[in-house]
Amino acid sequence: MDKLGKKQISIKEFDANATTNSSTVIRRYGKWNDALKIAGASLNNTFYSDEELLSNIKDAWLKKGTQPSRRDMDNKDYSIISSGTYLRHFGTWYKALDCFVSYISDNKDIVSNEIEIDNNTNRTTIKHKTKRDPSDRLKVQVLMRDGNKCRICGAVCSGGLHNIHFDHIIPWSKGGETVLENLQVLCSVCNEAKGNM
Ligand SMILES: [Zn+2]
Image (cartoon, rainbow, N blue to C red; front, side, top):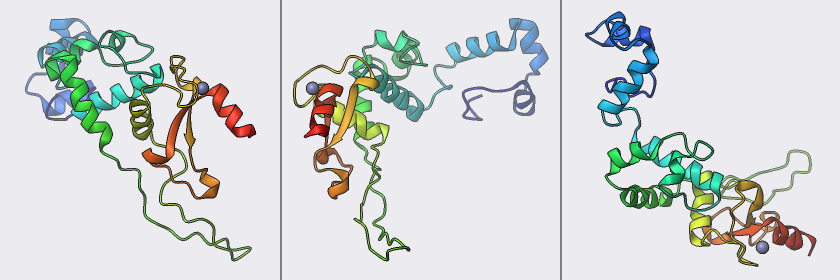
């Protein structure tokens, strides 16, 4: 399983790569999925790569709107990977979060600088170096920096993503880029108020 580097393995793939026949495994464990669960528990996380584990924390952070606790990782609404898997992989939840901070700071959002020319009007538009919508990774960076709070009123973003707005401080339409320095967390109320100004 480790060899294939996958989370799931089909019976067919197993027979092609393993020395044991799948029918032996099924005879022993009853169901294929039960065998996978047992294998996952005994192989100490060969199911998940660092990237998958850290990306899942990112998703949980965005779903919750604030930093997920170890216990949150056992909440299916936030996380698809259990806290036990994190503890086996990283040792402690604190260490997992420590790795997460390095992971999330690795900014890959700057795209190449392109000149956009409108073929109809022949006018050049603002040359953005970034994409308008922040990546999930960047969203978590903004939440971390702003303490998961609205930068205007200080409301804690507890209601998940639907209450959180990632606002361009210098508007995108005025050339503001989608970078950490130009983004802020706003609650829906303050975001609407800013929009009406
Ligand atoms: Zn607010």
